[in-house]
Length: 166
Image (tube, one colour):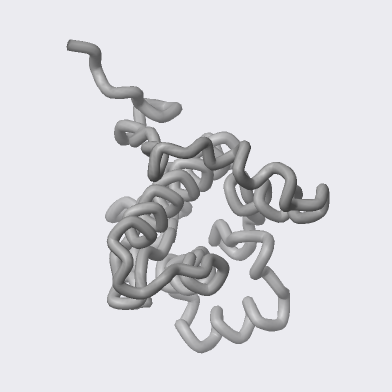
């Protein structure tokens, strides 16, 4: 029996998304998206992150004044700041028919694929750090979220902080 694929740097096994419904999703979508839309999709699966004030934050949501506001509101609790800002709530971007088990399954497959891309981007762009996160199931649907893993002493010399619930 073969061993499951592992992510870079020995991280947790990479779960390969399963095709849905027997159709070929890429071939189904190809003629429907313009190049700028494909760029947006690519940035969802391989986002950019910025390092600021000891945090690693999704570039898409980083805005200096907003970051400062959250930094002050959360008393510099970096893990809570990352938990708040580094989230993709897929139901905000993807239409899903409520109660359709096949669509809900496909949304979970999408969430896992996004999480694999985020972990890969984080580990490649910040090789000296480890990350916690992945897919969190919520009442509204899957959420992809990541934070820097902080040790008891903190990866940058400060104590860890408990995450704030989404």
